[in-house]
Image (cartoon, rainbow, N blue to C red; front, side, top):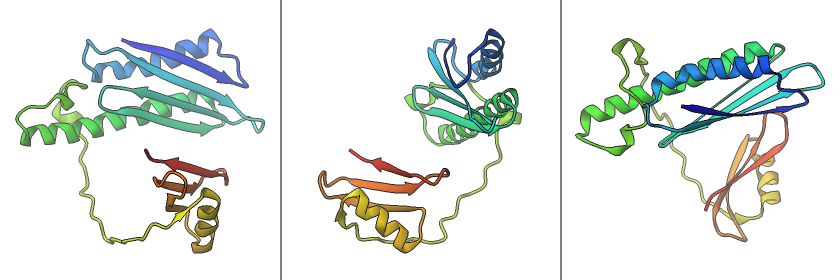
Length: 183
């Protein structure tokens, strides 16, 4: 049911690594309906400082599951990524089942099989404690980065002067800058 696309960067994907990844990620199949074709995109990286990073992305019909972990132990990272993905699925399914109780029918619920009550995740209500209204100024990405640094935030929302679309610049964990563009 789950097909695998496993890539290695600075590491050779051996049969034992491939088998371990497939064994771990295949455990997620129990959450999906049988007729669903899924592809797990797995990226394994090894850095110069001997840390390993495992990234797994599984695009499904109504949700894209993605998890990553970086540690000194490759196999440990694979285990943690599998646990993160399973938690995402259980959390999503809990929300869907609660919504299903309020809505009679809907195609958005066909992705996953029904959760057993003991698998449901106890959710905390999300309380929005502050609302802020901002005036988006037209500018280019470089100016947005300068503005982000001036206000000492990790992100900055702006209107792209060329496309007139809303965009976001943000500071990544590695210190570099990322750009999110909307259509």
